[in-house]
Length: 547
Ligand code: NAP
Image (tube, rainbow, N blue to C red; front, side):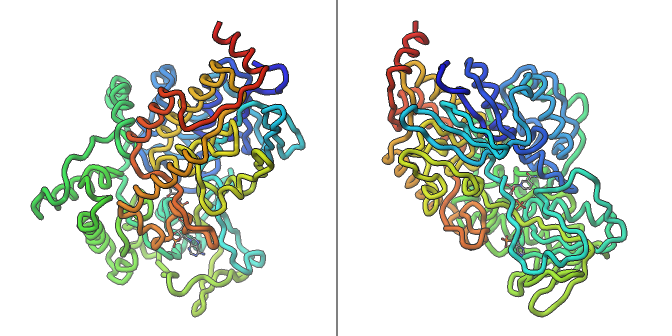
């Protein structure tokens, strides 16, 4: 496209967003390179190889929709694929679409500076390289900067310790070991039942309990696989309309429309079917109405009380905040694990872990022996990855500073003062099924780039007014939901899980369908929320593109 830049586009991260961006930008004829810190593709599915890691969403919509070849040729083995199966899927997609040769593995972005005189990004990597590009597409992932609590004494620990999100590639033998698991989010609840199968003792340190929905995994048989493939057009149609971008029917009933018996029947049915249906196919006011939410929340508490035999443990496992104020994990015999003789629960909500000892952990009052500690302590979500990278836009303004108090974007994808930077899965993008959400976003990014090419624009960026309006809109939506209480549940949605991180809404909770409509309107109306910079050179190129 241009003689003066080394690449038309640089993409960061080989997960769902990055690979789709790489594919689409190359299809547009743009010279594109993807930088990936790992040794292979997969993004979160490359790094999070902890025991029990598998998807919480069903295979047939937790995947790409765009490639007919991939949809036809890839077969899912089970309802919720394991990390290993997800890794193989990413490798298959990468090789089938011939993307590997455009990826630089073991290469981490350390900085990018907007050169205003040339309208290019100057990108720097950790191997000391520097090159220019016109478009910078960050798909570094909202949950890619693991958080490790700052606990004194970790260096003195004589056993082994691991972070779920940086799990080693080799197997860990838990046989006969005393294992401490810190954290009971989506990662911790997958780790516990699997490690309990071989460890001598598993001690789970819980600060805030979660509402863990039963996943009810099962293998997919050939007939189901054939049926899924035949239905893909409908699956994507439904997923793009559904609130969370999942292939689930739209829920029509409010809790108040039903008798008490029918409410329980609906909840029971969703509990039995398993997975996120409990959130999306029970009451359509579950997210909006405290009373409806409490009916569903209490239903789960009663399930916990029925499953977990020790009443004191059961009560500790019962969350007291509204369902969905934290992202509920899907579990595979999570509550059942507490009925095992070798699993115990320690409540550290009032009596926190204060120190790691050479042989275990301690709180203010007690000591716990451990041979292995697993930290499933989450992520500095959404804005975290940008904090460690020196991205500077116009006038040398740093992205980390721009996002310090209010992580503003327009449509989750672009920031004023940072021309031609696209933040796939960035702040205030929709809280939704990742693959479907980022595919919609990448389509918007390529539409924006095509718009620039047609119009001879060297760059575009959102107006501050558009960013402010989107931030306000996302905030107003949050206020109308039960999620406004998320801060009290230490939720990463609000940055509330990281000590010292400013509290601010990090995701758009208006629903994926509404969001996709908004992206389409913006593109169809020639991007009214953006301003463009036209240079003599790009104007000339536009003539070539349009002729
Ligand atoms: P998380 O939900 O943030 O959970 C982190 C856990 O660590 C929380 O229980 C937290 O307690 C605890 N913790 C943090 N610091 C602690 C400390 N000093 N002492 C004791 N406990 C501490 O993180 P995650 O489980 O990795 O999940 C994050 C997100 O990643 C999920 O919401 C989901 O979106 C995604 N994820 C998805 C899957 C999947 O789809 N299969 C699997 C894993 C993760 P508090 O709650 O009190 O802060």
